[in-house]
Amino acid sequence: MRRGMTWRLGILAAIALVLTSGLGATGCFRRVRRPAATSAAAAPSDFTAHALPIYRLVTSEVLIDSPSRLLVLQVRLESLGPTTYAFAPQDLRIALPDGSQARVFDRPRAIELLRRTAIADADFNYLLRDDHVPGGIAPYSRQPIADLVGSRLLAEGVFGAGQALQGYAVIDIGSARMSLDGTVVEVTAHRLTDSVPSRSTYQLATSPAASEAR
Image 1 (cartoon, rainbow, N blue to C red):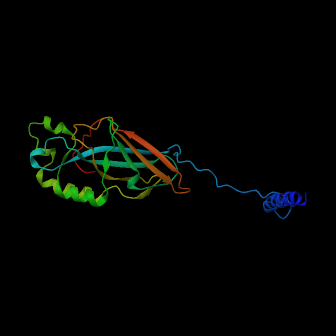
Image 2: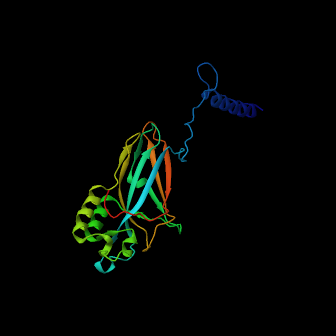
């Protein structure tokens, strides 16, 4: 009988120890604060993203008038309100109409591609002109334009009211195509005040009508 009583007293003492360890100095259970739940979902966007396929990069003069899988996009980000955003190039996504993702090259690879390829107009309307030059760009203009693109690649930065962020992105779309119609450009930017992400998308609907760097 005494052994049973001793065993029960031991159990009660252990329970009391557990309960008192959760009590504060006032005898009430301490409230454990859990970190606030965070969501990966982006906040509603109040900035716009615009993009145009403006150049092709071709690997041979023989292909100067042919579609290419290597393209140069001109991208512009602009806030619609007072919010200021931070952007990094890795937050640019390009979804092709077939569901695949285009590859966006980082700065060193983009510059190397510009060095190794010939630059041509992305808008094939130049072929409709009888006096067109191969690639839609005069040979003496190709290198200066390539150098300009390399110096204005889309980089990490901020944009806000009255302060747009723009630049070029060199991409690989996987296969040569005449048009990027239906392609969706998605940009994620983070508010400077609290780092909350916000997304904006832009769907390419028509080919550009530009053959000069802007």
